Amino acid sequence: MSAVPTLSTASMARGACPALDAPMLTGDGYLSRIALVDAISPRELAALCALSERHGNGMIDISARGNLQIRGLTPTSAAALEADVRRLALPLREGLAVEWSPLAGLDPTTDIDPRPLGLAIMARAKDLRGSLAPKLSVVIESCGLIRLDDLLADIRLVATENDVRKGWHILLGGTARQGRVIGFVHEDQAADCVAALLSHLAALGPRTRGRDVDPAGLPEMVSHALEASTPQLLSPHRDAFGLLDLKDGKCALRVALPFGQIQSRQLSAFADHARRCGIESVRPAAEHTLLAFGSRQACTALQAAAKTHGFITDVNDPLRQIDACPGAPSCQSARLDTHALGRLAAEEAGELFDGSLGLHLSGCLKACAHPTAATLVFAGTDDATHLVIDGKTTDTPAKRLFPQTEAAALSALSALMRQERQPGETSRDCLRRLGPERIAAALA
Ligand code: SF4
Image 1 (cartoon, rainbow, N blue to C red):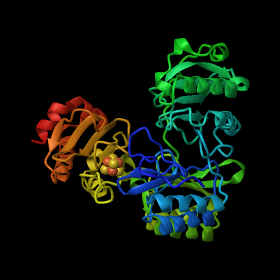
Image 2 (cartoon, rainbow, N blue to C red; image 1 turned 90 degrees about the vertical axis):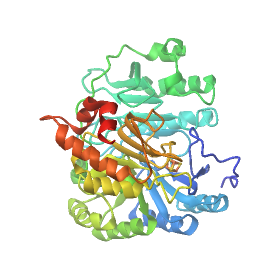
Image 3 (cartoon, rainbow, N blue to C red; image 1 turned 180 degrees about the horizontal axis):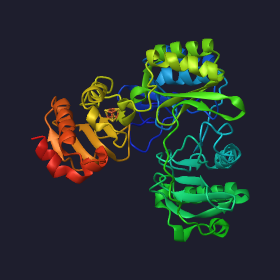
């Protein structure tokens, strides 16, 4: 068990990263993150829910990266939580965040299994603990049913889809679309190459991120291992959701949490229901989702009940297109009731949600729920709610809204969309075409 954290060892600052042994101070107390490298049983999930009730405020997140987060802790209860979680002997990920598809080994659309490489990279990174940036992450993309394209990664390895070579394209920084391709590495050299890149990052200092690395100054081992790589155009992909047929006749159910958050009692009831349906294991996954693994019969039975337990079961549910932090009243920093506004948007501004648009509702400018840009952003500040088009919370707002007028602004945006949308045009393209000035004028 780690030492009890103090205000000086914990941080609310961007750049800090919560973990089970390093809880982070947030607007509703300390938050501990539980990262898993494998699935757990429904009973183990229920046990984690009980620990959230005992030590925290009874709220659990599944983060955009697919980690469980227990909220509302104190320094003392966070330490007790850590001890209790370790007693459960779960497959915890320790150290460097190396992430791959939760369907690895089971995905019928790919023969690539990223797990051996991922575990090798984690083992090689152990010696660098404390020397790397806390939020540094490696993403291994096997291009299967569940893709991690939207996750920020300092180092991203993308499986070769249309290449006779067997190995990985390496990108530095950003999402799959933004990352800088530095070359291709053969399978048998991939772990050594990533280990050398990590050592290079550590040598450049504990704040250095993948985006900061100069491709012209790579260590010799890395530049020798890399071959020329043509940036791959990402093939169109719709993330798998609902019932998924897997290898060997197995099945999975993928459902999502509205705003990535649920009461632990509700999640515990879902875990009990899953067990009674015959579900063998469960696993939190990217995009605030939860996977349940079992027979098709078990997954179908659980799917029928998931909505009553508070989960999103329809891939087209507008709530899936909304990212919202806990907001007011949960977080002391919040100046916006993000969840109430999100539910209202889903019910009354349906015109906006055609699958193309991301709505980000942030209680303040810190953007805990969605650090990257979104098509539409509402962010609370002390004196106004900032409406940003195609940007981040900290970008110049298209309009500063008076508090309590956000719902009216959403209705006006929905009406604008009905009026202005051209045949075949998506909501995102329509908003981009109209531009911030025109949109701000429509909200006047
Ligand atoms: S972004 Fe949301 S959760 Fe994060 S500090 Fe601001 S109000 Fe709190």
